[in-house]
Length: 449
Ligand SMILES: Nc1ncnc2c1ncn2[C@@H]1O[C@H](COP(=O)(O)OP(=O)(O)OP(=O)(O)O)[C@@H](O)[C@H]1O
Ligand SMILES: [Mg+2]
Image 1 (cartoon, rainbow, N blue to C red):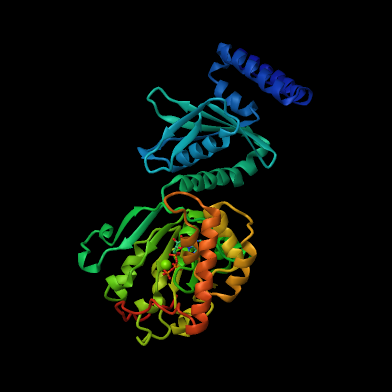
Image 2 (cartoon, helix red, strand yellow):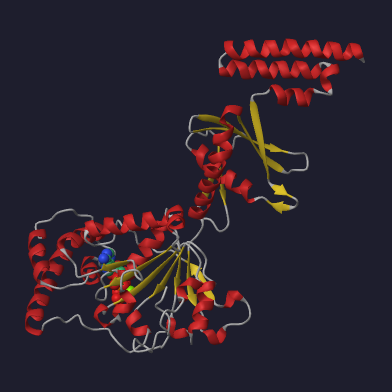
């Protein structure tokens, strides 16, 4: 026993000495190769066998963290997030790519079909490896040098999780929810909203409006969706309210679809006429999911503004959780109670208006794929004198029988603008239509949030 211990002690001392020299002399990749060779030799020496695990851990400058697929029979969501992150990370470099069609996902999900992936984060090299046990359970193993411990455990793992989750969210199909009439609700939460897949082609790129305003809105949306830490810091609920106003056919609903597409949020289209009171509204809001846009269209028609609002209401909107955008739309901003739309309740007022020349150019590009034309000058001056909604311009530019006819469409538009010009001179604004006819509701306290 004494002999064995003595031999072991001197072996240890030699190994210490050897390791220190080895660390200084050899480059990183050689060190790994030599280390592997040494470790396998050490493992073969029977007298060290019992201690080999501890010895390896003691000497190895590498740390390994495991993320099993299942933990105590429960699926480990970290495993899935890592899987998605590594899949996306590796796509660019992978030679073998495995494509799979995942239910609930948009299109194909591409994954790297290789076991090991190297990643670099803040100068720290890490290696990911997927290990499959005999029972089929898989584990992601993360290996890195000890000196990167703080960075890896402090921020890298969190970063991987967040990236993975955000990619998962992006791949998910968006949904459009509409509320069922409260008379049809049963005891299950599922009966409150019904949904369909949301597939709308609208994008900010094809939205016809002043480019400066467009940029401002895009920046605001970006700031909101990346604002988790900011909202936490200032102690404010992570919500943002937009009021979209303007005449019919100017792109309010189109903009909401573009926002949802841009952020990959679900839409909850809240029809107030289908509910009876505040408590039902509260139930609906509580049943919405995060990363969603809650929309109330035609707010002027939906709500009786003479209805008494409770003073200092704790806010019906507090019923919905974090990461929500709330949008009201109206054709008649002048009819709204100023208390409803004051800043602080609605963070941003966005006017969508009649077609400007800038907006026309976007539509001409969308529908006719032209950037310029002889008639553009004439259209520019006609648009300055005429009120026409982008929807009506779009209608003129739309291909007839699927045939694009640039000259014909633009001529059509010029004629229509001339007619409108004459008419508007004679009769004033003919766009003050489309109001009323909708059931009015009294929903006290709706506007406080
Ligand atoms: N600014 C725009 N940019 C691009 N397309 C537009 C724009 N405005 C309207 N359109 C076209 O006109 C159609 C109707 O527009 P949209 O439904 O967005 O108008 P709206 O402002 O919501 O009208 P309403 O007040 O009647 O609800 C859209 O499907 C789109 O094709
Ligand atoms: Mg609309």
